[in-house]
Amino acid sequence: MWQQDLHIHTTWSCNDPAVAPEQRIELVAAVQHARIVGISDHFEHLPPDDLESYARSVRGAGLYVGTEVDGAPSVAAAAAFPFDYYVYHCRDEEAEYAGLEQLMATERPVIVAHPHMLDTDLGRLPQGCLVELNNRYVARCDWRGFYGPFVGRFRFVLSSDAHQPGWLGQSVAAYVARELGIREHRVFAEPAER
Ligand SMILES: [Zn+2]
Ligand SMILES: [Zn+2]
Image 1 (cartoon, rainbow, N blue to C red):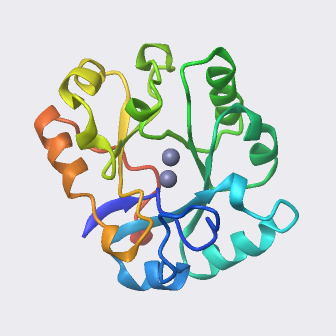
Image 2 (cartoon, helix red, strand yellow):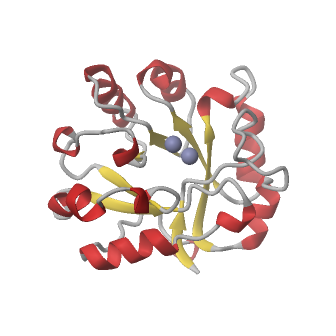
């Protein structure tokens, strides 16, 4: 069982073609592949006037309610709703770093998603920031060169970025973390500690 998995999509990410129809909240909860599980459907795909239904469904399954925010344009609306945490796309642009600060100002955890896929400049992120090792994408980059120099500077979070039940795992991210000597930062307390 993995420690935590806070980057997971379900059928609420309705315009994402990678999401399988059987990837429902209830199934993700039933699989119990990690001790701490959160759902982070794309904010831009959620019904803007019915975020409550999404939150109720996720929380009803006993999971943390997150959302994946696609950069600065969505930040104000996403910050206005009481999500438990955010997964954030931070492209290498001034406005996107400002958006990150704005989300962090909510004082809820913000995980910078698969930065190597978006050319995020890790040198520009605030110290102690939560940076993701994303199981879906991490093998696609020179991860030693990209993440290695920042191991002591950030707290790292491992994620599956699962869009299908078969992706509910973190084997590649865990391998990279082991190689880099990263000890995963735990965002939420384990159920027994709450
Ligand atoms: Zn993403
Ligand atoms: Zn995602």
